[in-house]
Image 1 (tube, each protein chain N blue to C red):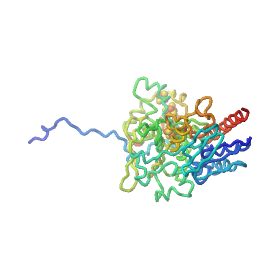
Image 2: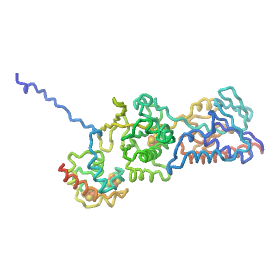
Image 3: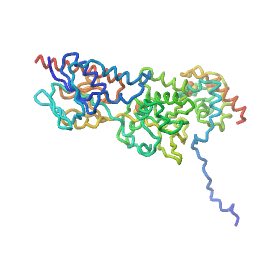
Image 4: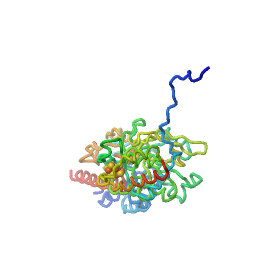
Length: 115
Length: 343
Ligand code: SF4
Ligand code: SF4
Ligand code: SF4
């Protein structure tokens, strides 16, 4: 019997859960060492509200920072590349996060690891 | 002017009011259900937001002069009955006392974390309460002893027993967010290599210098904050605690294993509140705490003239708010008794 014909259209759904025990905080720790102000982010979203790139894409610096914090690196390179480094976010951030330097650090480290 | 005032509860509110009423010349009797005065502060190590030594503050309150104050220990008051412009106070053990005015300072009780069964308190060894953590801090290296080794990841769970209609408490306990941040810092000092996570719904840094403490926790102590309420905790074979939470800022469920979980247990009204309310004819509020006749204008006054409230018996308060409330209650008692004397 040809097994292929028995496909009913079911697939295994991908688990969306963040397994923090498996997550690597390597990127976060490196970025944190070079740009410690990432620690100060309170996820308020002021940066994303003013962001030029966010007007035209689904880019959110708030979310990017959080993903780095949680060790989520998949697809991050494509995300970072949406930023134009205009620096508006830095003027707006209430916690004084050095956003541009931070984005550059994230980008640099991602390129190094080739992710 | 030797009018008799009974103060029900010798915690910090009762003691503070007692020393003021004493200095005003009243005869004061403190009625305490425990064997000692001071209440909850006696179990605390450091206080937020400046991490002041709790024993020092407790001593500062306890050592205030109480010249004409007598204290009755082990007397759990269950009823206060108005009778001919006086009040008859009765305790569980049959003790009865008469006073011209009564100040209720029965405080709060800590929420019983066992009731939040899904968090595993009382079931898993390494799930403890914030109050127990304070006791561990008081003992040198108590935390290591509890776990048996140096912890590498600890989680602090906010709002346990508060903001939770499922267990019947809709209100916020006000002090536990900043306590969590303070305890996170203390844990990090004890274990610099340990990862510390606060799992919160909202961070309510409402007092002076609380926000600064929060910033310091992030900047200097690398404490991580995850916005999401724990759905459950489970124990693995090695005795570690696996928690499930949604990272609501990322919109994804998250699972992580901790060496220890600290539950920030909130405040609930003390057990005798209901019986005191019904015997005295005063009101209990929807949150279970005593109700003032006008919370804006007369926060220390009940619906029955001569019965007053101070401290956390009328809702969650910080230590400094409790002390201010006690001082204002003392003035309310004085003005009531001197008006009575002039009649
Ligand atoms: S620097 Fe990047 S993230 Fe910041 S506002 Fe400009 S485009 Fe947005
Ligand atoms: S504005 Fe600053 S604090 Fe707010 S999310 Fe952006 S980086 Fe974080
Ligand atoms: S102070 Fe914070 S932890 Fe305590 S009940 Fe309120 S929100 Fe929850």
